[in-house]
Figure 1 (tube, rainbow, N blue to C red):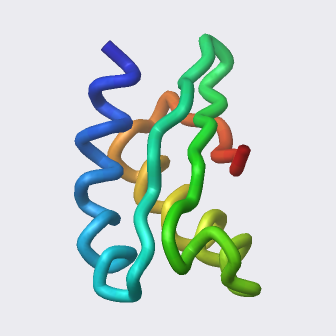
Figure 2: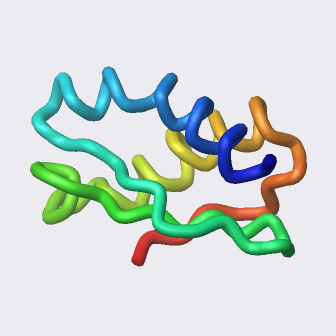
Length: 74
């Protein structure tokens, strides 16, 4: 299942987010390959959160789950 693959990929990103006092929660994966996540902890208010989302989380997810089109923060 796609959502399980995404969760496994997110687990690869989590340690680096948690090292900075943040985390990421998987909210939804739709049939068009759009992943919705919620940044938590220090990531939620960080000015660099959009860069973290696109250059970090989205990049890792696309590498591990090719079906993913994009990642959005909710």
